[in-house]
Length: 116
Image (cartoon, rainbow, N blue to C red):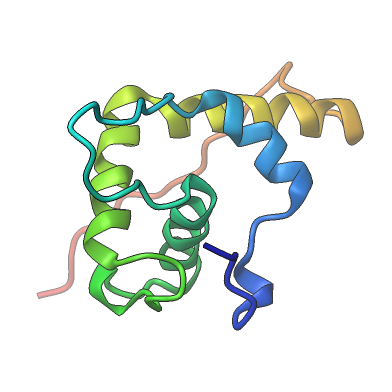
């Protein structure tokens, strides 16, 4: 299946795909046959489309994959800690490109009574 070209601003770049692909599990082909799995790249595009736009899973354009498929993979990958690993990888890349200063951190907040 070809990658969706209707929503080019929501497609993952090749560089991002090369970063996330090694983190994703390998899914073996079922010995019983059946329907082939949807492209993992389309699933990644669908997940990040939903996260960027805030749309419901069922509102993801079907050119990526079905919303239920994207949601199922999202739940599985969240359980496996893939997005946390991706976050760490992205931080290291940012550190290499721009540099992070993690020597100190600050938290700001205020506590007041809620108005009646």
